[in-house]
Image 1 (cartoon, rainbow, N blue to C red):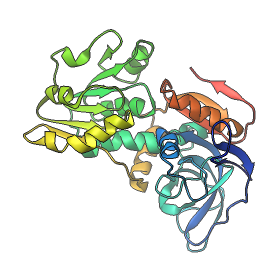
Image 2: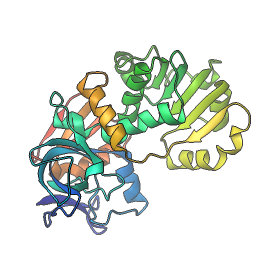
Image 3: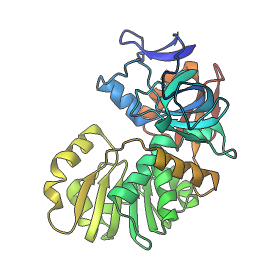
Image 4: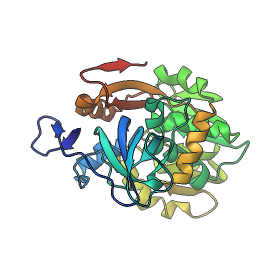
Length: 321
């Protein structure tokens, strides 16, 4: 099969489009023919930090069809259309086929595309866990989402609306209308307004991007408020991990999110997408042989929504913006 394999000698991106052996499903494992796989910040960050998957194939978010199943599998059968999160199972999605344990998969709703399905797992689960689990979001709360235009941000706005929050989104000028269309009640253009100095306060702050200081975020919290660090520069994440605990004395809490894959959460998110409650935003779709280019583009930090790889196309790029 074709796959994009990490090779530290590969020039220029260390990701090489190659022929590799097609995997075989073992007990309790499903072989999926991948139709689409999305790119996440965790892919290039892991590569940058030298955290290379065992098979040297990145890619966690997959959507495709079950080709075969191993012994003792119960939930899926050949021909099923599925969504998978391989982030805790060795990745392997930048390929034409991948194996996955049953607990990493859920059925794809018939009324969403494979590209939309592949956009869901890591980004939507991250947004869900930040709001629901770490943020304890409640109806009527004032929620600030910093970095509302990327993969996680677009899901965070939609899910915050699902939970009945009053949403203020922070993004650049070109993404203001996009954030409003996804349900934000107010949008702050950070290129024109220094929002930490506005004097506004919130019950929940979800920081996905941006370089605001932790102390400024804490000042923006109402008593009993919660701040959740989801993403940003590695230095920002490090500071949140190291200093967040010490800044959480009192009623205002500072948390850093770590996400584990969950079949239950993936089922919930797939249902919301199938019911039209959340809609993945796909900016562009690359062919599998252009995966290195897609990773490079996402790393630039300007993607509006998700970047997706379609394994059935070669030498092609479709822009959705």
